Image: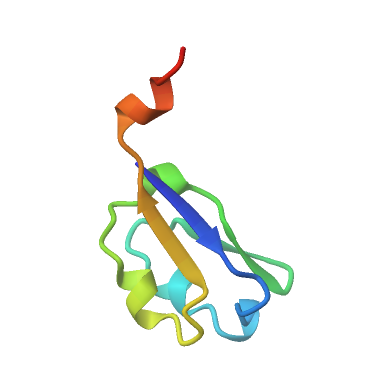
Length: 72
């Protein structure tokens, strides 16, 4: 599992869309003039989006399943 964050201050949104076009599992989607993370559960941690983002506006962190249930 992954936690994916977009820095919307640096992201060029639909003017770029490199992450959405490059992602093999369709994690990102276009919404009006913006890009959003629609399906973070589909992320395979391949980092292709990080490689193609010209603004370095994406942060991905791996989440261990144990972390999700910690404290329950």
